[in-house]
Image 1 (cartoon, helix red, strand yellow):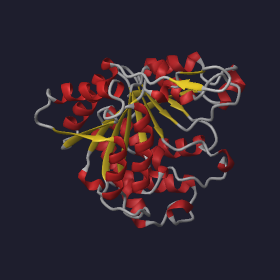
Image 2 (cartoon, one colour; image 1 turned 180 degrees about the horizontal axis):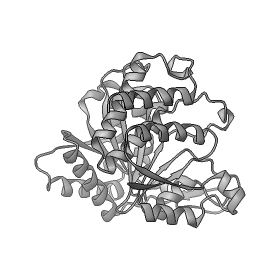
Image 3 (cartoon, helix red, strand yellow; image 1 turned 180 degrees about the vertical axis):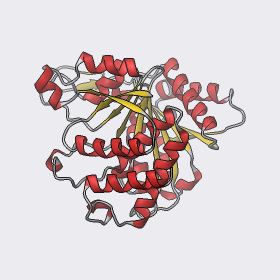
Image 4 (cartoon, helix red, strand yellow; image 1 turned 30 degrees about the vertical axis):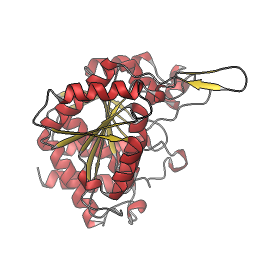
Length: 335
């Protein structure tokens, strides 16, 4: 039996997480869920949106499934999600983007993965005022962080039987910082001669993804570019409602949907749980439960393709719980 930390989250979080838990349980994988708090409820009950007890649980179990969080105003955090990643050194942000028939999109047969460095670069928010009328943000790129994220991308590509890695950068202008990232990427790539490697400047990459996304496979990049391009990739497949993610470190991995907590929909049983369910499938794959993960992905595909028990954003009228039950039933039927 696996022990997994469960953070239900804020807003719509408890509803989409409940659907994902039901689907995981239908897969037959034995999991003992250890409930932990973060976000608004944690602030109310513990006086902090990120209790040390929650971090301790994640360190102990090594695996977590999390709903979206709202960073409370005045909490002392720019982002609870960023604080979690920093506290646990979750240096990989893994963002798959895969097309599903039945989801409205301009593209078909998309199958992309963004591997985003998660700990440094401009997105880390190291900034300060320079006098009253100017602000300065510091872009930090290190060889260590660059090499380990690129190495993760190559190991992931080899493990998943994928074909190519594209390193994304702006080294033509940012010759020292992005230049260092690109140099590190080339160094690591030389150690994996069986995997095709190429380089793209980030603005050109954005255009290429819109014009000819099928040419690409796994992309690895610094933090800020990854934040932007991963949402672009989600747009290619129909939006954040079908976009899972994982934040992975050497000892801990946290799986969560990309979308926000949407507090205005809280308790209305209307929101699409697909991203959270697919994030749970990523979690099972991380645990080595490949068959169960694949079964969930096939069940999601079947329910989306049929279009009978899906939420309003997918063209249906089902609620969050009903869609979760439909996917769970499809999982059980094909075990």
